[in-house]
Image (cartoon, rainbow over all chains, first blue to last red; front, side):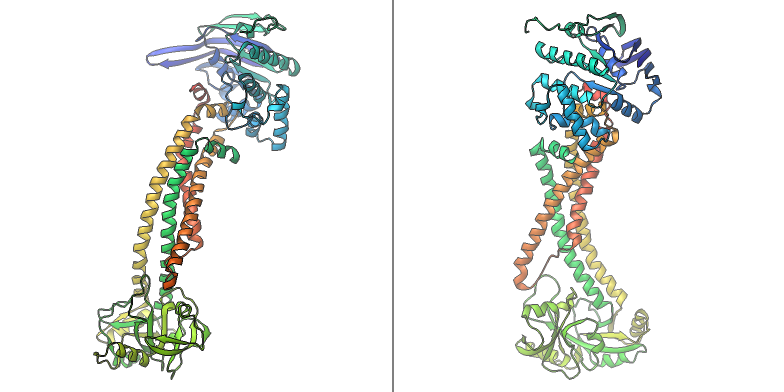
Length: 238
Length: 383
């Protein structure tokens, strides 16, 4: 469903040219549950941004369902993101002035979905992440784990075929990390949505079916994951 | 959307309040001055319809608005009436209603008119109640609307003009002009009142102005030119010239108003720009997120434009409301002397509000464009 062909992204910092992503060929099929790991600066986040069409590659191609994204206009890219891709970020990125349900509704608002329908689907998504009773709470009234679950609900509410998560558990404790990763895995099983998770946490990676390791902007390894069922069980609280 | 924007404004209550307050001050000044200008325009327009429907003949060196030095001999009336195209020439004699100054606006005057030929002239203004003065009327007065209100007198009542009793026979409809403050009596009686007030003047057969009405179909400008040619020692003010004099008067005032609007524009505009630029920089990450999850450039743009126009609208509404309150209070304070300095018209109310909204929107353009042009990746990276 998503494919990269010798995709490359370089930045200039002063005189120096930094190759954040240095020629990656990757193919991710529908319904996959995979993680991208690697040391900091290995290009994980940049690759994720390229996959999510948030950023354009310096060279190479990103194809989504066979469409070369470089041929699309900015408006078409926005529409593509909005309809097919859901994003989950490390810092949750919820809007502080909106309550949980309103945050989840936001993408639907941009899709001009009818308000009643919007509300219904937002509550449904909150239900999926187990936060139906917190719909009226603002982010400041929620714990970190709850905020991230709201963010996941926001990513899911448009029923995207691809969910891209950038360090979704980076700011969570172990208990909440487990909650969030198991939630994503269960959603992947139920809905068949593709999940692509950037993480540096081996615990998170252990849940995924495929683990891609990046080093210096290239793929160092692409191996099957452990697909741990309940990796959190029996682990001491950190 | 609106609810969300209001909540966003509420995040920085003090800053939003101060910005709005800045607009309030500017718009308040604009409204009050607008009220002053509206009242002046009413008077000028009223004056226009009175002064431009006739030719005024005044002594040389005198102007349309009095400042009359000297008088005209009554013999000029006959001279003017001989000019072809003149229907009637009416000698008039005016003196102030009291010896005190009436303050702002046009003075209240006792206007004496030669009643033997003044019916056309006195019909230039619509009579509201009673009748106009007729030939042979003595001890009778027709009041302008403001004076009628001041004396609270109608037809049949007796009013006191400079110590002499006059019976009101008619009241003119309001014209919002100088005429509203006129008390029309006969020429002879006006002259008598003048003599009583100035016992050392030997005045006989003089006029302060001679009002000329043309025969039907005669061009007033051409007629004025003819009078100028045939009658010596007078100043002839044609309707066009009167228009020019009146126009100059209001021009100065409108220039002042524009100046105030400009100051409000600069001060208010800059403070809105400042606030919005800060709001945008504080919310860079949020903007990045919105764009990542599918907000189009247009919707980010309109969100911030709406926020800044809302600042303009709140400042404009409050400023205008305070301005109108001030106008009402000021008018009430001067009501006892029967002078209203300000007028509240739809333009006075809607103008400043609209101005503030447009100002807010324009001031928001630059910050909103900045927000809308942010690249999602870079915006999300921002701390």
